[in-house]
Length: 302
Image 1 (tube, rainbow, N blue to C red):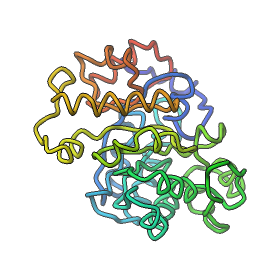
Image 2 (tube, rainbow, N blue to C red; image 1 turned 60 degrees about the vertical axis):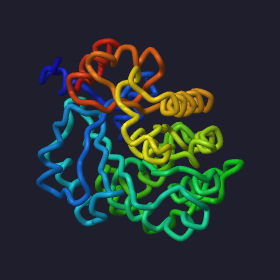
Image 3 (cartoon, rainbow, N blue to C red; image 1 turned 120 degrees about the vertical axis):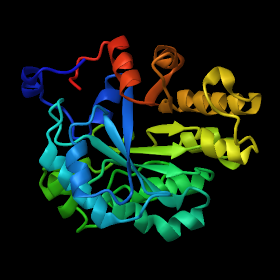
């Protein structure tokens, strides 16, 4: 189901971040991927993607901030989206991991350099340590952001507004007001997520997903399988090894308890069941996404 040109012209987005706008409406969202190193040309090609957001992979892909910034510029020049947004939302994974507070304190600059490219969020891999997650969230907030119990003072400083504000189509002052994690800040435009994807992260699933400022989490079946010594133990839900099914169930339950979105693979034959179970972010392709959108009676064009 494609939006008509007239529908797209009449669409007036309420937010910068399309993914957050839909989640705030209770609508599941769907993503596609781009590899680290993708630049302007790839961005321009992906500007009209069927997906609600693009996962820009730099954990194992190339860590190249210039390429990512050019990718964002390509999205702008190829846009707007059918929903009227300036670009699809872009959420990056990084080679910085949530393994310890010391690691995050030493590498928070990578988080901030990624945000300076104008992306809309970050998915933190191997989210094991609650203190690391708190430092991660603080790295995505301005020093003078509203204090939040349990979080360190924000770490973004003055002078960081200009470049991402240009990507978002805002003034520097407007950007600074919106550059904050949602749903912690109802007006924030950063969507921060966690990969609870190994046995150490799983043991702290309830603690890491409850850190203020986190908006979604996934259980990362590929890495979870390696960690549990079950590299072939993942696939469709009804094919999971019992230990893998237990890991998935625990992360899903933790997300529900913390009132954040749960990410999982969805397929055309199970997307409706996944949504009923509580999946709010789906990977798996365009056919599954369009079936899910029809199931939830989405009205925003895609």
